[in-house]
Amino acid sequence: MSARVVHGVAEAREAVADARRRGASIGLVPTMGALHAGHGSLIDAARRETDFVVVSVFVNPIQFDRKDDYERYPQDVSTDSEFCSARGADLIFNPAVTDMYPHAQRAFVEVEGLTEHLCGAFRPGHFRGVATVVLKLFNIVEPDRAYFGEKDAQQLAVIQRMVRDLNVPVTIVPVATVREPDGLALSSRNRRLNADERRAALALSRALFAIQDRIRAGGVDAAGLKRIALETIAREPMLRVEYFEIVDPVEMQPVERVTAPVRAAAAVWAGSTRLIDNLLCVPPGAAR
Ligand code: AMP
Image (cartoon, rainbow, N blue to C red; front, side, top):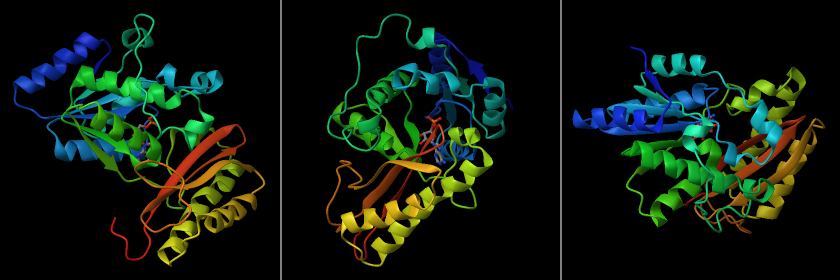
């Protein structure tokens, strides 16, 4: 069956209310479209755990810190809706910018502390834009459960904290990162990579897996681990590192010693494409 596509906020509310009247639980998968198997795994999880699956497809202008990145972001809702239908979604909410922001937006969600490091240090306003649009989506769809990829670990931490601190009645479900067989994390931005950049990009996941192995083997000194990762990436001259950090996975603060589970997280540029990736690394003896 094909998923129904709605654009307006009122239409989306009505469609969800109708499902609720039938006793359905609601799952929401927020996306910016250009859907791939990573998004697919979020939709699959929602399909397994809830009765009525809503996929939002919205390229949210207020979370982009660079105009060219926003303008280049791939948009093709008919391909996305076929993808969602094949994965068994029920409703696609694809608002226009004027549906989501009909007048000047004056209220924003700010999640302090978690947004200072990693991507937050390089993309001013990004997480404020993300948290704001996600809260709007939660208020429109009122899902029981909402699905977010670990691929965007800082985003996941920010949303979990927003929900906790603002008493938003939704369960956040993290979903593991889907990778290509060679290790590259799936991303809508991968399609911008040329063949050389695509090959070079592999150094990012390679460095993360190397750090994960060392932490599993008892490596504790974050500075030393970072140095090894940076050397791995530096061997690939096509890549430029924006950051590589080892942080605690809840507060997203850099650690000096790895004595509990951490996230190794990085952003690199391959040509004009920015790629991010991360891995949870659990030292021996530490519970997840
Ligand atoms: P985006 O469309 O890039 O905003 O991503 C929408 C959702 O899909 C976010 O929760 C992402 O973390 C998640 N996602 C993106 N890529 C992947 C991936 N490779 N594996 C798992 N989830 C992903």
